[in-house]
Length: 161
Image 1 (cartoon, helix red, strand yellow):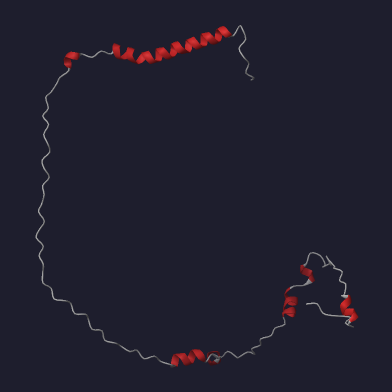
Image 2: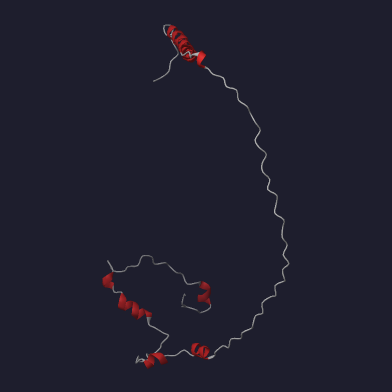
């Protein structure tokens, strides 16, 4: 709704609304004293009593007990006996000489220990082309131009790592 300025015929309503709001505010503020005036109490019932005020008693101060100083003998420090623990080298020899002797004692045959493994054949055993949803294809084939400086020196092929 757009607000418009009051026209000539609405100016009387604005003045009337302003006067009405002022009258309502005065009635609300005068309502409290009027209700107090209507609620009159019997003043003859009021009673006055005389009260006597006294200072509180002083706090009780308990004197501190005299300190009793006892003569104590200085404590002698305890004497510690130094115990030397001998170390056994047998355990050290066991840990420095690893082997498969325990495995031989329980009947496990010693296998050949190899450091090399053929990882390509292991991968071929695990994965096949049947596992793929489609056959592999070349996505990007970069063009490589062999450097002319190497061709001039007689180098025609090389291995890129």
